[in-house]
Image (cartoon, rainbow, N blue to C red; front, top):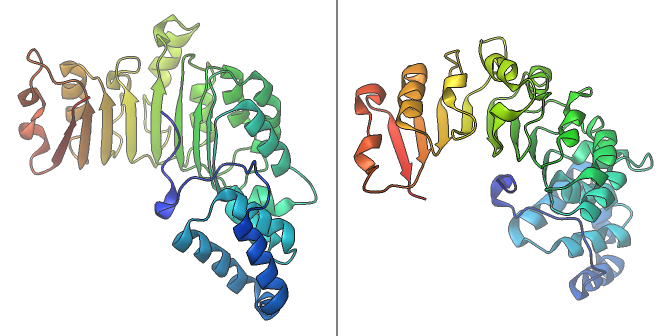
Length: 300
C-alpha cells in the first residue's frame, strides 16, 4: 500500500523543496500592482479563491509555497492547502513536515491537516515527532500508516483525532493494534495490509481472537480491506454491516466465509488474486450468496 486516494481529484501534495518559481514571481508582481483590492475580501472568499486555484489549475507545490512567503494576508489559506493532504515517503521529509505542524506560531497548520499518508519502511527517527504532532491533528480523518517500525503505531494511542479512514501495513504487526481500533471507534473504512506472519508475533493468538470478534469494536465500519494471506477474514467473528469488502489473495474458504458472514449487507466484493488454470474465474462467481449484488474480479 502506498498513499491514500486524493480527494476531489487533486494530486497529493508533498512538502516543497524548491525556491520561488517564475510563475510565483509573476504572481507576486501582479499582487503588488493590481490585486491589492482582492486582499480586502472576507476570509471565506479568500479561502475559496486559493482552493479554486488548486482545483482548476493544479499548480506545483513550490508555487503555493512561494505564494505563502510573498503575501502575509493569504498565508493561512495557502498553508491550509499545503497541509491539508500530504504524502510523506522519506524520514527527512517527514521530520520537516511534522516539526512545522506543531509550531505554536502557526496553529492553523495542525488544524488544516485532514488527510495524511506516511509510507516509510524504517522510520525510527520519525517516531517522536509523529507522536508529538499526532495529538494536535484534531481534524485528521484519513490516515495511511505503512511502516516496519511498530513504535510508530503507538502514537495512535494518544488522545486521538476523529479518524474515519485508516489504512495500515508493514512487516511487523503492532501488539497494540486492537487498542488502537478501540481508541478510534468512529472508523468506517479500514484496510489491514500487514505482510508479516502474524501468528509468530508474541501474544498474537489472543490479539487475533479479540480483533473484530464482536460488534463493540468499530460499530460504524462499512468498508473493509484485508490481506487474507496474513489476516484471514475468518478472524472476523461478528456480522458487521459491511457494504464494501476487498480481499487480497484469499483462499476459497476465506471467500465463502466472508460471503456468508456479510451477505445481508454486502454490495461490493473485490477479490485481488492471480487467475490461473488451477484457479479459474468461475470459482469467484458466488451468485447464490450475493443475489443481485456486484462482484468485482481484478486479475493480478
